[in-house]
Image (tube, rainbow, N blue to C red):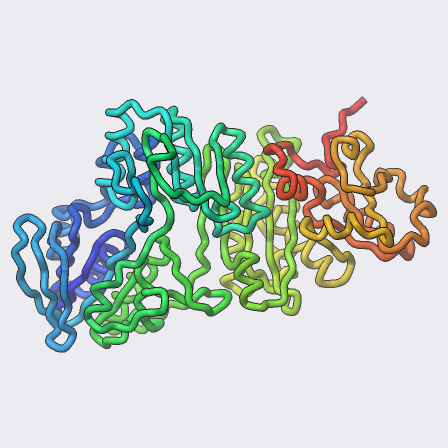
Length: 553
């Protein structure tokens, strides 16, 4: 049998290697229009910023190495320009001289990827304007920045690639601005987590402009401009072949990665996938899903019964010393799907606070209020973010509930975690809500509550904390004095309790509830509200049980 693969990198090269491991006798041809068949696409921003110094480190496998190991007929700088599904033939054009030839196949696997979107605005074709998708792109950006002595950079688009480019250009000493058309950067996140990333980047000297549309690139006045406004699937070849596409122009496949033609498979960034949680069609242009799809497609070409069950879209990004990660559905997606849900916010330390080097970590976990199942999670912090998001991604894949998180037996020693890991704590908080031990309200409810005379906004922080900033018409009764002052609150309506992080106010809510008061706890506390609504400066201070570290006398 003969399999022709269109495109290399995560999808095509992985499929080729898997096919050979499964079938030593198969005739495998890999066609790649570029000169690299397997390279570290996700490492390109770090080459621009100098963290990866040797360009050769970006190349995972050369065509020669790949052929020597897998006996795959690798043809670089050649492009498949047409498919004849009836005859099972592809037409190929050589980039070197423009000549063409045909190649037959028994099975065809498409891994065309996606290309950066270049908006039709004046200045987009200027010599100082770049996109980043391939090794030549990274080489061109780095060479331009070095040779021209660039001092300022504008990154148009605040997605993960744009943010990584902003960081790496800043590390090279450039003054960097991020320009994002949406109300927030990193739209894979929700606003309340994205604001943590934005405030941190500002603290590192990066300027961020949201709700900002660039009408003329030359007007930016930047020495170098990076266009990072998303990608578009390279599905034109599939369309010309008559393969079924989604409304968004993505190649439609079944769970075996087979297209509408029984002899053609497709994987990677050009493919529509099913979101594991929602079941809805989505586009996830990430290396992890592409690798899994490639393996599954190869299995099915060889007659094995592998199935692709969908993606969570788990992603992580490094921004200087900060780590941002997400998995599952975000809140906007959950609302669109009409799933009954709630959310919890936690400020946790990366490990035991008494052990040196602990850092703050903010978690947002979304859950189904009817089943208790975890729907999604987002984390911003420093150490330990990646391992917590991986645990939560595993929990979602396993169909775990909030109750299950409380029982996870996670590794603990003071340098690595706390006896109650942040993932366990998220489970405890959700369990309290699901079982009715506490009711909660959120940062976006506060402004309406400030206008109501029939309720009490109770702030249980210390007087010092209260004086640094508080809600309009709030009453300050520090937690340690609350039990002795309960009568001051009697008969004044429902009590909406807040503190700095949500922990002390939870304790206060439990006290009040057991004394007959109707009350609600502010999730995430004043700290979250100030970050989102008041654009507060980045606050990396640890959250202690009493909100601030208590000095011993």
